[in-house]
Image (cartoon, rainbow, N blue to C red; front, side):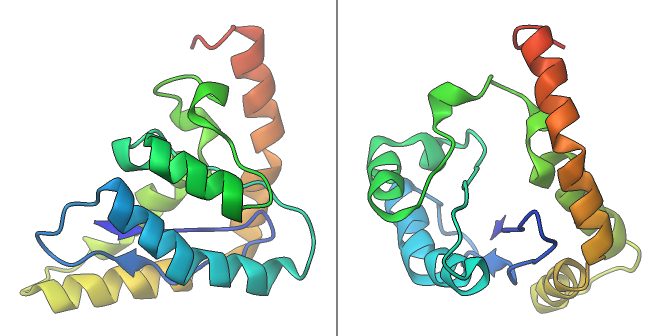
Amino acid sequence: MALGVVSNEGYVMSPHIFQQGLRANAAGYSEVLETVVKFWIGKIRDGRPYIFQQDAAPSHKAQSTQEWMSDNQYDHVTPNMRPPNSPDLNLMDYYVWSIIERDTIRYPHNNIVSLKTAIVEVMTEMNKNHLMQICQRFKSRIKAVTETEGGF
């Protein structure tokens, strides 16, 4: 499993790849938020406000994670603020992970190190302008989901 973070200004955090076989529970996820993500966000935001969005994975929705988010993030999208199963409202789901998958499977990987290296390389070399364009389209996606009251 890999954790990826991007900003609407096209910045990409080098993905955090969880140890093989390790279950990403709330405690492990919160630890990565504290030791990796929080530092990266602080570095790129330069004191400006931001909103942190995550999907509805169990470790993301856990009460302890939500408490950590409230205590440590400037602002964040809580699980009750987003409709379930809404990939249209998550840049990572509808764009970033598909690019990573497309580009990492172009060549076979004989071992886990090769695959991890490819994931990191593809993600950190993503086109900044494409990411910013995708983020700009986000407003129209929110409007469409709002107009359909969370439907398709």
